[in-house]
Image (cartoon, rainbow, N blue to C red; front, side, top):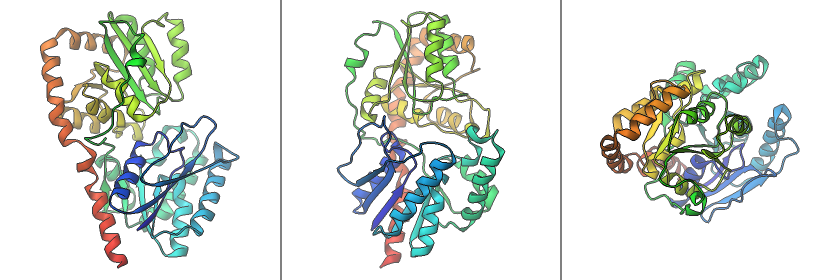
Length: 375
């Protein structure tokens, strides 16, 4: 089948969408992935599916979303396809309209509880617009995916849609890992390496506390890899606290290289705070990236994260997300080398179970059903 996939980002760092496209392409489907091209976008192309990156006049605010959906509308109006696959609410309106006009299958993948994101909680008009769009379309959808069971339950409570599939953001068992010796060559030797990675290191995601905790840790270095709204503030904090030798920043990089950097570390951090409903029920990609790289995680106490950490014994739950408490807990982890070694040895078993090859079965079954219905 021909599938057109839509996203509002620039494609390069969206691992979930890339996995979905690659998986469907491997099953013989012809995929076109539509996204954006920004001035600072990383190069991106795939050998198994086609991509088209749109240059827009506007890159934020209402005019951006209006322009994006208008462009998608006209592209989809004339695209040869059997299925339209929309990622997140910000592309859903145009895709849904065209799916009705052209009588095409629509698959919707919502990567978060969209109207619960913190960026719009203090903007009631913006939130109301998105909620109205979602409320109008969501009950009509037949094929919906989301990232964990807690968020699926939120949507079921809102709209009564019982057929929501859960597909977590888990990396493949055979994912490519690129050596990153060049990136860590200048780091202090014989130190305990801690990493905080992500493409959304924003407010209330623990970056500030991670930097501040380094004041209380000896023989440790913190690697912050990725992008986000607070990165500039974190860099300023490092200078203010005189931590430049102990906190190192890395720009966004290809996923294989990021995993390579992570494998050079000893502990991963996932410190989202329970400040809003979307963070409360989040299950960050980094939790699984650390697992794939073979390092344990120290994570904040959120329901979905705790379920993974405790069920599969992949790390520790932070007692508190504050600098001193984090430093004390990491010091205990460092000091108990036997417990650390035993936990790290169990990560291999967890990684065999928690892998994309197991997680994508619901996706493949859905598309197989759509293909059979078209015959």
